[in-house]
Amino acid sequence: MPKDDLFTSPTSGKMALDEVVSEITRFLHEEPESRYRVVIGTDSQDRRTNGVKFTNFVTAIVVHRIGKGGRYFWRNGHARHMNSLRQKIHTETLRSIEVAQIVVPKLNAKLNGKENWEIEIHIDVGRSGDTREMIKEVVGMVIGNGYTAKTKPESYGASAVADKHA
Image (tube, rainbow, N blue to C red; front, side):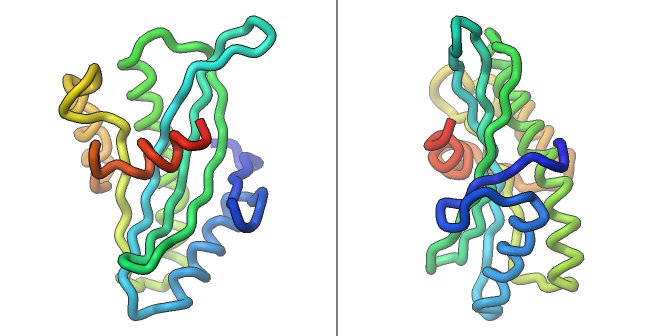
């Protein structure tokens, strides 16, 4: 992921990833007695501009103060058009893992070992539809990288938040 990749916050506008991490840290410090879930999910949509097809990937980072609301940040990422659903789902999952591999160490460093938060990777696959055959492999990718995986209907980070901006 390029360092100059900007995320968008509905409340704060464009932000660099380090600013996103600082905002998440600030949010977690507002109510230190609360439990938090940091969710990363990616969704994609095929697009066409000036006759050129491409796939737009949107990655969302959601910080949820459990039972009390949350905040989210998202970024676009374009890639050549992908015809294969399997390739799209793998790319979505890998993009989420890549963001987690950057965000989690930064959060751990800023939070000095606070353990009132957990991380989840949300994958846009479910038990019904065309993606049902891919669940084991993409969940395995996430677990193999040390993260908790959630699929539909629990994968709101990918299937609702990222999808909203895809």
